[in-house]
Image (cartoon, rainbow, N blue to C red; front, side):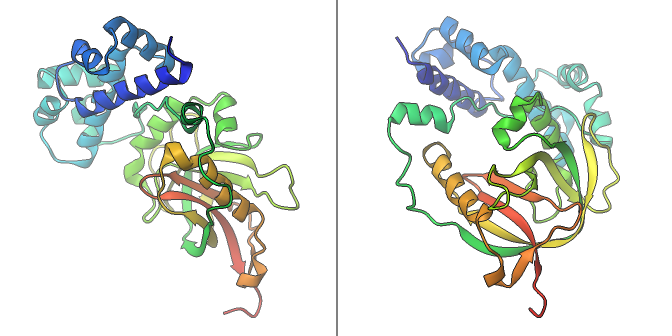
Length: 314
């Protein structure tokens, strides 16, 4: 009998298979044969762990990837339809309208926030830890890099939950992860230059004066200060002043094997740092936020805390 984490791993393999064959005719038998499990077990556990049928997941991923092509390229609608496995221009148009309420042509002329379906992730560092039955690395074997970064005045589209304390807590408080993440992804072309699209963070920092840790978790996307586009339903648009930040950073790493250790290392450095020896003090100007960037294999992990130069410092 398979352990629980093993089905998470198998379903993650199914998700990877779908991504690699997204434009090909669906073939449950080919996928199940490659993975070594019956179509019945594949579909049953896929639905149990993702909350949707395999057929619906494939359909929604195809139309979501097609939407990004419409937004970001000048390819013909027909060519995009063929690339993502639709039988015709008309078939994609029907699917697009049914999913997003507009036609591909209308969306291309006027992109707007829409709930894209992002790649599902059901095999986490927690499951990897159960599989390996050991620590992800020697505690204290890493150090966080510290550098400064200036972020100009900008706006932020997202959700603020003043009672949430971290990423997991935020989603457990009733925010729909799939819908929110998909909608933010549809706005990724508006990302403030030099920033990461999906950005989280806190309104209140941790540290010795707050032993229970940071609070007021936020999730969304930084956009230019002159952004006047649509704001998705259920989200807000807030102005964020310009500031320098101390960036507590770890470069790219293996998410499954090292995520827990990396996050502990970076956050311990961020919440226990005294900026005075670096010539700074914490910047508590209204509207500033403590940002969190989490893109393990491409960027790494970072916590950014706003600072200002101490008097007399150049």
